[in-house]
Image 1 (cartoon, helix red, strand yellow):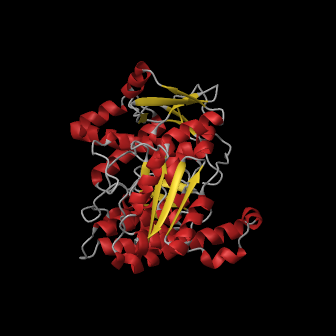
Image 2 (cartoon, rainbow, N blue to C red):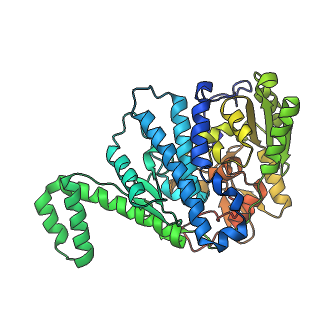
Image 3 (cartoon, rainbow, N blue to C red):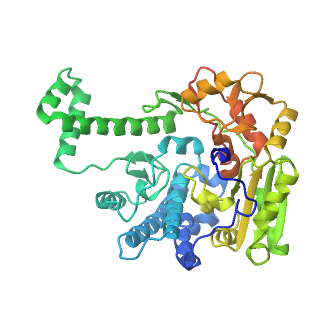
Length: 452
């Protein structure tokens, strides 16, 4: 997300230029959305926060209806991928977005959990992916466990641990790895044997029997199992050791309220309905502009860039289109946003264009006014962090530390992800993260947001 990583020259007419899905896909998008997000609609009249908490039967009824719709949506995607129909870029974005929307619902929209699933791997080419065994397993689990859903990981853009993300009708989540073939079964039998016996000579005997290729396959399967165990442990306890990085992960137990800018977004969307454009700022630093296709199609984004620059936003200030959430693996897709259904489809199919920009100068000044300490990182500090694989955001060539008097953190892309694509207010986000950074941990996930 770091816009300063690009070497392309800034062009106000190209930056934030409108994008949309192929309009021909809108009927299909509506059908998949209704199934994947609104499957539980028949139960909505019965829902209230009190009733949902008090009645296990109502929760199960709600989840069963929701999962039934998700299963039908996934079947339609699988049927299309397996057909002779060409898979366009718009199809890919739509299908990943629908699958992501389902997965985000299963994990309660929690970015701190989504990050554990994402391993920065390239998306799977759906037409070339051979996942018949995974599809069979997902369908078999749906038959054996009525009311459950098993989202196929390859259909999503961020679930990259396990082959299936499964939730039963009572809300229990399981990560499933599908293995087929004689060799895989032999390895699984060996791992089960070792888990029971802890035989010290077991690996030596395995290597002698199966050779180098068998050992490599065993190592791959062990890494997969470790990753699955890690993600499960984080979701259940909030603490775990990441097997890929050897970092201790800690997520605060309590849900932390983090203010949202949903109201401002809805205000500009409705304003653009009335007069073709509307603008708004959040915390005096996050700029939002909404433009209707008819009146502002060619230059709404140019007007937004000029507006941001007029407030000393700087060409290095991060800026995005709201529809960019459909291509960001850890972003909430448009389907999950707290806006009207009409506005969701207006965004996806080009009738609306929403630009977002964070004025870094104003952002830092606002943080200072709220008691947050802001300082430039030294070259030594930046070098040490980069050696650990961190890539801090740099403003005017300098990395920035933010602190509350007890803890400090580098300003990095994760903060921007939460602000732009999870609708969190800029100042609230920084305060919440800084307030939940225990110094004894190597890595601390941002807190769970009660309203995420």
